[in-house]
Picture 1: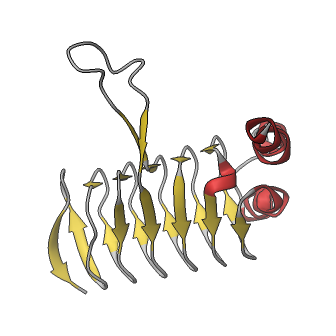
Picture 2: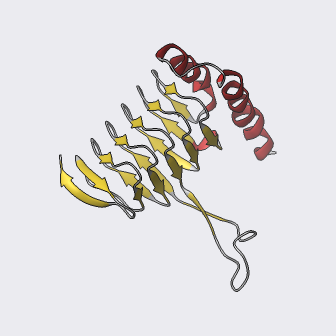
Picture 3: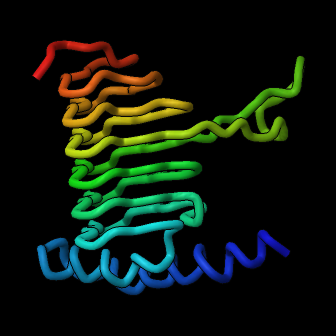
Length: 171
C-alpha cells in the first residue's frame, strides 16, 4: 500500500510533468517553469528550483531540495538525497545512493539494494558527467570536477576531481 501511495503521490505526477515539458527548450523561462511544476512531488523542495530537460528522479519522495537549485539536462538521481541551497548541477550528473548487492557465488541481478545517504551542501557545484555514489557528501562551497566520481565525504570549500575523486586544492 505504501509503495502505491508513493507512486500515485510522487513518482507518476512528477514523471507526467517532466514528459509533458521535455519538448520545451532549455531556456530560463521553461527551466524555471519545469522546476515550479515539479516542486510538490519531492519530500521537501524550496523555491527557485530550475530543472533542465530529460532529468530523471527515481523515488522523488526521498529527495530533499533547498532554495535556488539548478539541475541541468540529463541528470539522474535516486535514493536518499539532500540537496541544500544554491547548488548547481552540470549536465548528466548522477547521484546514486542505492547500490546493488550480490547473491554470493551468483548474480547482482536479484541481490537486492543497499541504500546510503547523499548530501550536497550549500553553494556547491557538480561539473558535467560527475557522480556521487553510495554514502557520500560534497562539502559546502565545494566543486566536483567534470567526469569525477565522489565516493566519500569531502571537505568544505575544496576542489575535488578524478575517479575516485581526490582533493585537488582548497578554495
